[in-house]
Amino acid sequence: MITKSLKARKDDLSSPKNQLEFLSEGIFEEGELPYFKDKIAETHQLPFKPKKLEILQLNLGYMCNQVCSHCHVDAGPDRKEIMTVETMKQCLEVIKNTGAHTLDLTGGAPEMNPNFRWFVEEAAKAGIRDFIVRSNLTIILANKKYHDLPEFFKKHNVHVVSSLPFYKREKTDKQRGSGVFDKSIKALQMLNAVGYAQEGTGLKLDLVYNPSGAFLPTDQQAMEQDFKKALKEDFNIDFGNLFAITNLPISRFLEYLIASENYEDYMYALVEAYNPAAVENVMCTNTISISWDGWLYDCDFNQMLELKVNSKVQHISEYNEDILNDRNIIISQHCYGCTAGAGSSCQGTVT
Amino acid sequence: MAKNYYDPADLRKFGEITEWSEELGSKFFDYYGKVFEEGALSAREKSLIALAVAHVVKCPYCIDAYTRDGLQRGITKEEMMEAVHAGAAIESGATLVHGVQMMNKYKKLSM
Image 1: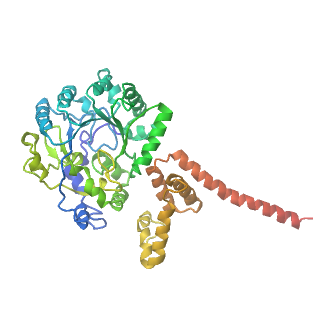
Image 2 (image 1 turned 180 degrees about the horizontal axis):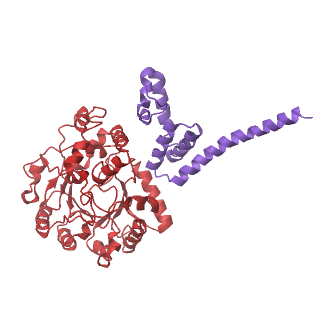
């Protein structure tokens, strides 16, 4: 199990430039597999443009209490990148005026940002229809100061979206660290106890499933039924929806693919499962991703690859939705991860 | 020519058999696809049957394919191993049941 980020280990793959080069070499350069831009050109989807903006996704920082082996953020306790109050204030201005109906806070563990609670209180006032916090669950039990998070989320009617790679201990702990499963279960029970995913409360709790290895997620609905049955029977846990998310070949998951000699097979599997219908609805077409330091990206993955939006407007301080919506989305081979099968996004499948 | 009879990369080329016999290849893949759809048996159950058969016919390609398929479907390693044992039990049973033939023949030939 890894205990440090690629960045702290000074690994070559901590450089987005190296990752992007790697993803353009080998099987792609030699023509065994088509570049993503050529693939979407086949179905006349190039240049790739956004549709109506629906989701603002804010990354409050890369610090996390966990060091998951598949993390595309390369998050961990050693990451110090944290959104400042100044940037948060700029974000709040945008949130007040945006046409987007969903606000999505992510990280790292967003709760570890020292100004997280203040920011949630302020952002909740903007009256956005769906206010999501992506919680890794274990943070709730990591320290006494986080134990009341379920109550806090409830108070602000936050929609909690939580990662739980599997409904069994072994696979969850392998991916996310020893003891993570038991803590996650406890945290889910705490969320249920304050009313999350309970009838009549309107408090939404959804789970995220992502494969714990070099394979793609299967049918989201079938997986949701399995999760519901197992979590109810074994732990009396309720939740709303399960979002199946494909692991994208970047950052620590790319490191894993290369080290386990699964990279080529995985890329073949993604390309083979390419679905033009998924391209239509992939999340970069309706999302803007904002980094801890206020830069704007087509998605959280492009943020980690440091591919800023291709627009005159690139920073939250100069935010303009109309200008941004006129951009071309930046693509590379990692995008195959979002277009495989039923597609993949932070909201699960897209078809 | 490769020096090995089996190359994992050949599994990706399975579809190419259609190139040398369009009609038969296409019919096979249509049939294959249909077989594994949800039916009276779930796709999950069929995946486990396929895994068991893959072991009985000792097809390395099929073992790779249906281990991956099982993982994707959330099938646990305990379920997979039980399926392999189900296949192995039938295979060894098929051998052992011939023991009756041996016994019959032995008795017939013996005074």
